[in-house]
Length: 271
Ligand code: KMH
Ligand code: ZN
Image 1 (spheres, rainbow, N blue to C red):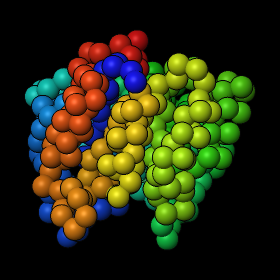
Image 2: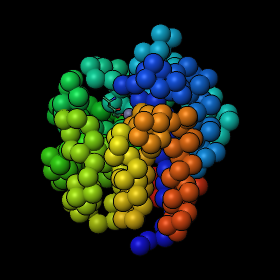
Image 3: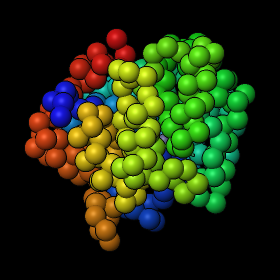
């Protein structure tokens, strides 16, 4: 087993959950900033960022992304990764809009999928438009893979040079409509990656903990947070994003995976 540092990404809010479901969900800019800072203090080096508007609704407004980014940067160093996924139904134009702020990273989902009862639309034209937005603003993509077919899309687009050469891969497993977060699925996906490609695993809901364990054992990186999973354990809601991160840190240390600093994460993913 590798003893390389593990990069922890904190997915602090997402677009799908509400405070009615989990009181710890950060919503306002101040809450998002506090959650980001606490996550970094707990061991995260990447903040996967969605924001909400004044009504608590998911938003891709540039002014809110700008405010939250500035406030995070005033309080800590972190790689800030903007969501270009937004919420289901967000227009491509809105999804790309915050990239003008040139975050260090941004997401790039590689295909359409059923997303619970909704459809997360990522047709070819949308993918290419978002990839161009990333490229124009020098943003390193985190390619989000929700299903095995998206791996084949990644291979095809790489061959066609439709996405930048430098990227990180995140396997987001457990969306109802996508690939579930089983160990077999993770092993299959990782086995298809180009040699040396950096990757992380994000298991949704009950898949979060087992996928974390397996990603650590397989030498990968890990994403956790209330966007992906609002429970600490079955029937017990998480108290904070930091609580979920602190658990990863404890497990990683026991597995001889030191926690990557922000600077190490930059070197590994962005240099
Ligand atoms: N909210 C999901 C529909 C991303 O951040 O890029 C999409 C999502 C992916 O969360
Ligand atoms: Zn997201």
